[in-house]
Image (cartoon, rainbow, N blue to C red):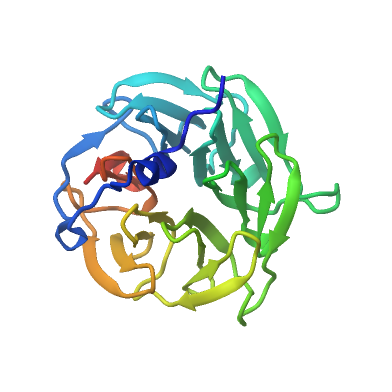
Length: 289
C-alpha cells in the first residue's frame, strides 16, 4: 500500500490550492483543548486525514485530536520530556517530535509505539543540541532544526542522516539558532533564524537563495498553498503574514486572553482547506482561524 499524499502535494495535484484573503485573517473560529484544563501546547501539525497532533509540555506527551477537538489518544508519556517545540506527521503517518531538553527527536506511531530515537546527525559525535522544529518535505524527507548547533539536518523517513546545511554566524548561509522550517509553494525551504531575526530561504539541497527580516521577533513558520508565509512571534504574541518575497501584508493577535489574542504563541500549521491552527501556549489552547 502506497503512502498517502500529503496535504500540500494533494492541493497542487488538484490544481486548486486553497486561497484566503490573508489580509482578513483575524477571527478565531474555535478553540481546541484536549481537556477542559488544556495544556502547555507548544507545537501543532495536521495530516491529510485531518488529524491534529499537539505537543503538551505540561503533560509531556502528544495529543492526537480530530479537527473539532475530540481527543483520540495521547502518546509519548514516559518517553518525552517537557520541552516539545516541534511536531510533524511523515508521509506514512508516524509522528515526529522534537524533545528539546533531552537533545533528541522521537518518532512515534499513532498508537503510541516508540519507533525511533534520533539523537545525532551522521556520527555519534554529531549529537543534537536543543532540536526545535521538525518538518516533512513534499518528498517525505525529515528536516530538523538543530538549534544550538546552528544547522538544519535532513534525514530519511527512518531517521538516517542525509545532509546538513548552515553554521553559526551572521553572514549569508549562517544561522544563530534556527527554530522552525517550512516548504513554500515555490519548492524552496523557509527557515526561521531566531538569533539573527530573519527568515532564510534555501533550496532543498542547501543553497541559500535569499533572506529577509520580519518586523517582530520570530518563532515558528508555516507556508500556505498560495504563496504566503505565516510566522508566529512568541514575544509579541502575534501572527505575521508575509509574501514569499518577504513583504508584510497583515498582523493578527496581540497579547490577551480572549479568542483572537495570544499568550506566548509558538507552533503554527495550515490544513488543506486553509484553516490556520496556532498553539497558544500560556492560554493553554489551540486557536483556529
